[in-house]
Image (tube, rainbow, N blue to C red; front, top):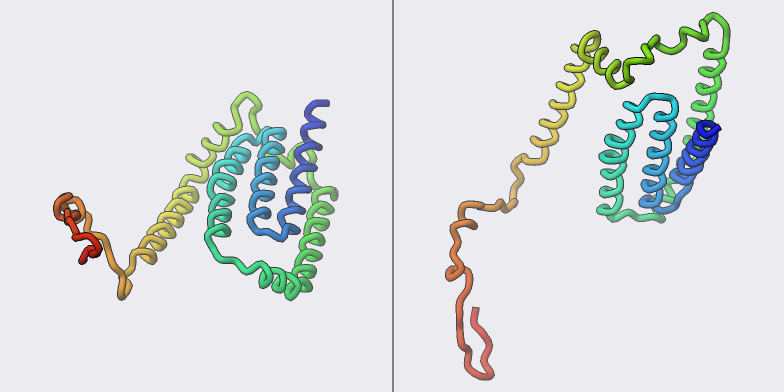
Length: 203
């Protein structure tokens, strides 16, 4: 009974926060609703025994992606009137994509509920004694080791590319000289003067 109440509570909050994410006029509020949706989705994953996915939702999506979205939205000078005009402009295309997505979901549910698939074999066979994270680790570092390492190399290349693009040479840029700043003495940075009454300080 407690599990059913928790499931419906998490599911209801996920649906409501998802609806508020796409209907909020303020992008900052949309990101905050998205973070709430991620947290409640993590709760659903804990209920079904997928604590590793729940941890990924909290650490990766909430701790990195959503916070990055929030900082970007807060730092950019966003014209809300232009955003609303764009929403109205692309409403037709968005509606078509939404209908296509709902149709795909219905087709997937129908294929899942159709015959030809043993209900007991839909999920991967797991040992209830071994924790979920341990089983995922065993698969990643044995059967899918090369794929896992390949994904790591792709992320490494993306990170190096971002660093190279950020630190490329730009004309007119002024860079810090850390050694010169550290070697500067207080007497070189300040000058004690005693101006006459009624006269200013000459720089």
